[in-house]
Image (cartoon, rainbow, N blue to C red; front, side, top):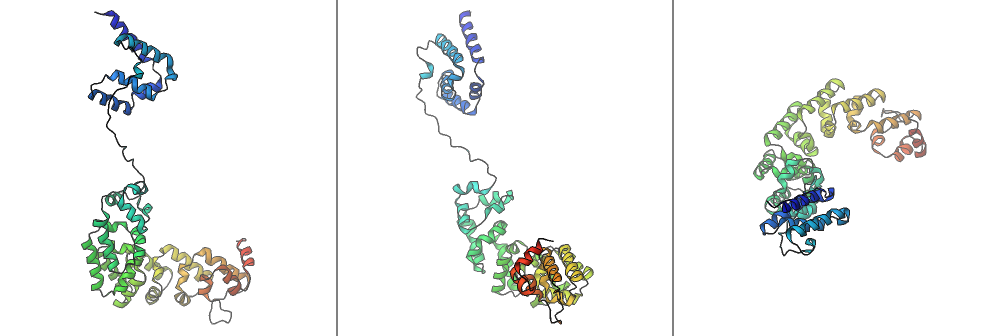
Length: 377
């Protein structure tokens, strides 16, 4: 047995143990493993490549003495006359392009996706889609010209203005997951219910989610409105056109609103129908919010039911706006909402106009006085 050789190998091994933490980390890195694999394929000595790559990636000055010992031992063991670190190998490595990193939003893929670039040109706000992983994965697999353009043509054929396409798809990107045949059936249903082209155009322009509801669901919602509020066919079409979001509102929430208006506020069924026809947007407000606002303008401001029916926008006025204005009128002794009185305050102007108009024209004061008053409440 050649003890000399064995000793030399032991010496080499002990020198390797003394490598710095930096070198050990480099030798165990994925990049080094790839180099060693390619060298083995090329029939090269992995030990020499190991020294070469270590020289490139690690600062030799960090562990100078250790490298000197390794160099000396290698020269004695393998008869290397020159510094093995200076050896160059005529090897061609296969280029490896980096993997596209995972992104938390679609913005990370825009530069590489022609589809997303077309979405940007349409004005779509794709940041609204980021939380829907299933949607994003499905859309990224589509081609703009073969998969997306047919939806655009169908929508514009039914009256959606091209400049609204970005807003429409921002609000309802899941339209791309619907079958074109199903969407066509939903248009056909509206036509069968005698909705005119202008009505259909307004519906899809003001409620993008409408087309994601099945025909049976839309029919059920329209039937609910007609049955519970005693509406005619023309009245149903009018409400659906003026406030399309009301038709797709959850029926249980609509039932809660109807109960609050009848039981908690004291309106009759005829008055409720009148309220719905005059301002259907009132029925989009949560029932609890409606009751809170009604309690203030009916019980505090003493506005009767009939006046409320004349000005249903009271329901859509926030208390943060209504309360300080009423209190300011009360301080100036002008809080008169009975239109039979000569000093009657026009409620529509009181709740809709800006602070300057209200302070000067309604309250008979100035905007500076009103601003000072707001600081006291």
